[in-house]
Length: 390
Image (cartoon, rainbow, N blue to C red; front, side, top):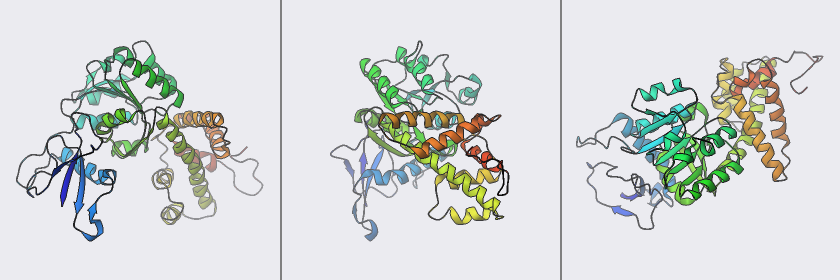
């Protein structure tokens, strides 16, 4: 087997160069990862994998999982030498927003060796990170002081605009060449504005919204869809891989947000189907848990059916992703679809349903699986007076 090392974690050049540095004939007792190597191409003599992997992207997920295991467990190689303790030692990174998603993402960065400068609206949420050495910043702008990159994941487009472009915002303190990565689901138009403002200050910006919910954030398995220049994406990749497993550059500024809109449109329709399927099974006298065992492994299978349906059946409606934030996303998607001249009736129906749920006591603070309440509340029998569509 021949190993090719790609890129440089510490230098921020993570895209494969035209000529990889080849390390053939290594001792089996040498560490698989050494120095600042970040990417590997594997050549194998096994029939099933003979020849080079056509793209290093295909090898990344397994390699990243292995590298994380080294970091988290601080494993030794067979010769007894300690593996490099971190991916990002001595890198200073700002982080704004420590909610359901952000707190786990920031923790992964801290565990990977980053020196974190953090800010969040509710200061108490930062305490666990501060106890581990993170530095508290009283404004979003302060997170950029001395940081080579700033990552944000907040609630609404207005919040994004404030933390980047407002008084005491990130761009008010960012030095030239700072990398700005906004991971909030926000407006494509705003993403382009921030990218232009960053470029005017000789900074780089990436809109990189995520999908995967609280589970994906905790387990570092987020899907990340990025918009920005290739150079910004290359610099961001080593940071993004600390909490993401499917990281794709979609195109120029705003492309990440457009991709996330497509993602939310798909989820909106799926959530209607998940809730309706469980409600139907229950109304038909079936055991919904047993039904779920059958349908989750077939053509109906989806992330929402596998991860959120069990929560529904357990009566767990705590937010992995808030209804209020999903409504925000769907509104952005509806507006964007209208700008593109696209009719989206499925999305419109889901928006109406979630809007109705948000108007019930506590409905806006539920997780998206809380939509099931509307179905469960329907009276039974053919002569029922109302339905969730009224």
